[in-house]
Image 1 (tube, rainbow, N blue to C red):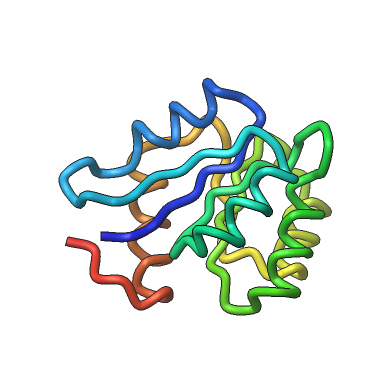
Image 2: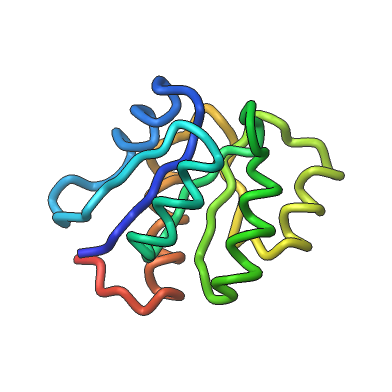
Length: 126
């Protein structure tokens, strides 16, 4: 069982990611609809894995990533983005993103990245 945080301003995107996460592993899921809420929730929850959108209105995913990695250097953060520009991907990797998953999320890709992320986070997943 892992604690998973999904930060995305789109409820549809959050539902899509949730739909990709295996339901038989009793993961604890939390959601935030903007960057500031995501940071606050991360601080209280300290999730094992975070799915983080890049394009959000108040605070971009890259800003959130930078802030979280500064305070939580071992945070395992998977970027979700429809923006697959090389420059954006490179910036996310420089800031310490674990991986980047293209939107819309594909179940097999999300599950594969989640399994790798949980292994890195040291969480037994199933």
